[in-house]
Image 1 (cartoon, rainbow, N blue to C red):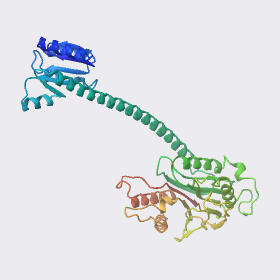
Image 2: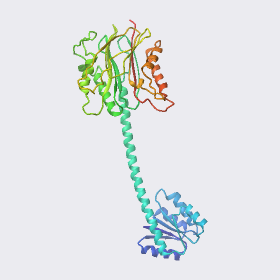
Image 3: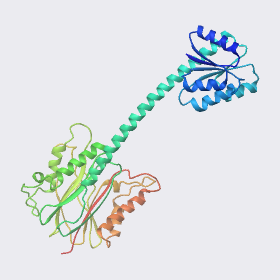
Image 4: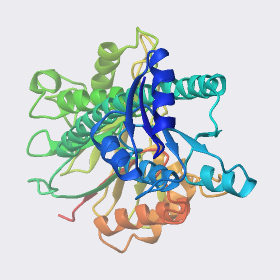
Length: 409
């Protein structure tokens, strides 16, 4: 141990130095507080033995400077040498930061015990400092890894956002509107629409189970498969029984093929629900297939509401699952709506569901407004139901809406 003695009594310094060096300590001696402070600033001192009363700077003042200015660099154990043993004096010494004290005249046996106690404390301090440094290093690594993961997730979220439709401007006589509110950075919902030819519009909405990276990766892959410019071999060039669309697969055939390709064989419970629909924008004839997804909704121009579909099985869960087409007809002014269960299963503060009936009512109430405004009204209604801005949280599930209205000829 490296010890510093600060005492203006040369005989005390000589006695302490001889005793401590016999115990194999390295000893430095100073005869006033200022000299001791200079040594403390330049040397790595483990333990300070200081007299209370010294010229230029007292032992209590020296201890206060050590605690105020050196503590962040190294912990110095301070033992105060004093003939002042009243309770008030001891309180003053300990309040200044002194660790221990020895009454004068100094006994070598007591000094040895006090020094050993100080060494134990210093060893504990060093172990604590080492563990704190290790924790700090681990924390910094975790923070760096977290930031790297966050950057990756933010980049993945931007990729997901980039896959969403950019414009409803397609060369077909329809109005199209949508909204999308992911519950987390990465979502499991996706939707899109595209013309199959000069007459037919294809559209779909998919809800992948769960959230996070696996769901997001599957949704991106599905988008790649289903987008018309990416999957001509998948969609086109197969004769179909659907009279309205003789040159491409019907919706049930597409979902059937998806189920075969994505059948869950690893027990990881990653599957998805979806609705795929094809609409003849000239005649209003349509065909859809529902795979475990919420029932598509039609708001008629005359004010009536209809739910379409037959339920069906989620995609990727059941081997050899059979999927069927459901035909429907849209007149000019009728609105066809696909949506995720993040809407109908959205809960208020009492855990009551927004439900299908409330969605139908909201859609019907905005029938005289534009399709885009109608979609906006639905999302606003769901936000108010959930209490966003009051509960200080986001939606519990992704919220997606995709609406189509055939324009009058």
